[in-house]
Image 1: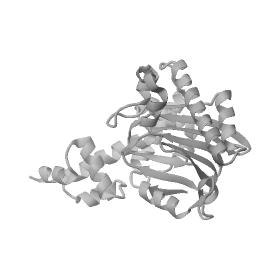
Image 2: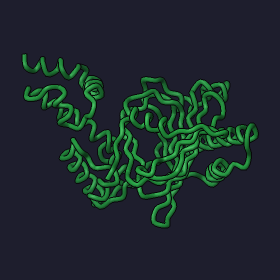
Image 3: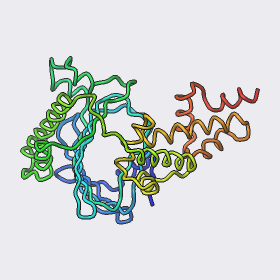
Image 4: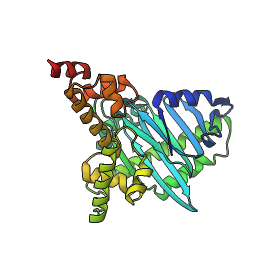
Length: 314
C-alpha cells in the first residue's frame, strides 16, 4: 500500500506538524503515517539543512510539478531486514522536471538533506565559476539539472556522521554544521571530477531486460492507479534499484517519466476521439488536477488540451 500526496498537500502537512525548537524547526511524523522526526537547522540564508530519522508504515509518494531547483545533496542510510545500505544523490541547479518522489515504507531511514541557493554557491567558489564541474552544477532555469547518485566514500560517511552526532549547541553548532556541509560539497565535486562520464551501470542480463519490459506493460495497463516503484519491482521479480537503473538503460527515462509520457499519449488519443471532455480525459489517465494535466499536455504537444480537442472536432 502507498500514500500519495501532491506537493502542496505535503507542504501543508509539514506545516501542521512542525514546531519551533531552540535548534531549529522539528517535524514529527504522526502515528498514522509512521514515526520519527525531520529536524531543520538554521545555518545561514541560502543554506537549508535537514536531519532525519524516520520509519514509515507505508510507501509515501509525493507528486512534484516542474520547478526551478537549487543545488541539493542527500545522504541516506537505510536499514531493512537487519541490513544497512548507504547512498547519496547530488543535484545541480536548473529545471527539475515533474516526477514522483518516493519514500519506501517498512524501513528506517537516517540521513541529511541540504539545499544551497546557486547565488550563495557562486559567492563561495569565487573565480572558480568557469571550472567544468561548476558549469555542470549551475545550469539555467530552463535546462534540466545535473543528477548524480552513488555510494558515499569513507570521507563522506565521516562527515555525515559528524552532522548526525554534532556535540555542540548554539553558535558553535551552526559553525560546525556549516563547515561539514561545505566539506560534503567539496567531496561531491571531487567525486564529480574524478568519476569518468562514460562509467555507467553494468550491462543488464537478458532476463532483467525481459522483466523491465514486463514492468512497462504493467504500467501501461494501470495508468489510472499505477503501482509504486517497490510494488512494481515485486510484481516483476526484480529489486527496486535495478528496476530504476534498468528502466533508464532500456527506455532512456525514469519509471515515472515513462508512465507520464504514456498517460499524455493516451489522453491525446481520448481527446482526438471526441468522446471525453478535458476533465474526463485527465481523470481517465490518472491526473488528479486538471491544471497539472493542461500544463503537462501543453509542454508536450504545444497546445492546450481543450484547443486540441476542438481542433480535432472541427
